[in-house]
Amino acid sequence: MKWIGALILLCATTWGGFEFARRLRERPKQIRQLKNALQVMEAEILYGQAPVIEACEKVATQVPAPLCFFFDDFSKQLKECSSSLSSVWEERMKHYWPISSLGDGEREIMRQFGQTLGQHDFTSQQKHIRLALSHLERELEEALEQQKRYGTMVKSLGFLLGLLLVLLFI
Image (cartoon, rainbow, N blue to C red; front, side):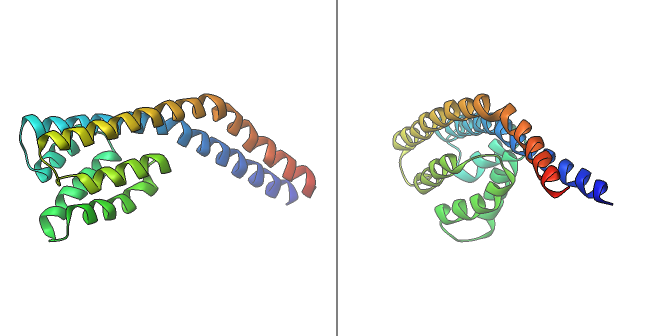
């Protein structure tokens, strides 16, 4: 019975290490997708002169999951309620962020972007989108550095932590 518990503990900590490594690996990928989404939004708003709702609908069709869920829900909720654009943006971010691998830095960038979305003329809106893109580029470089530095370490650490706990309990 002890060995079964030890095996379960070892598997659980190893799985935790692999899950954390997966999130480190997914973060740069999702930042790139977020940058792509903002570029599509910029094109739709500036060159297609589409309203924010239509721009978000088009973004939702062009980006992969889980990011497409954010833009799709955002556009649907904007159609249904009379709340301000920034409050709907903030609410959708609260629902989306736990299912993504994005970090706090990206959350703050997107929160600030949501406060400016739809508030300015085309030129100012383009400047805000470009600012968000440049901040996301900085976060992407940091995410790639963290992935390279900690990716394999957390996998090994999960297994070794489980092994240590098993040895302590036996």
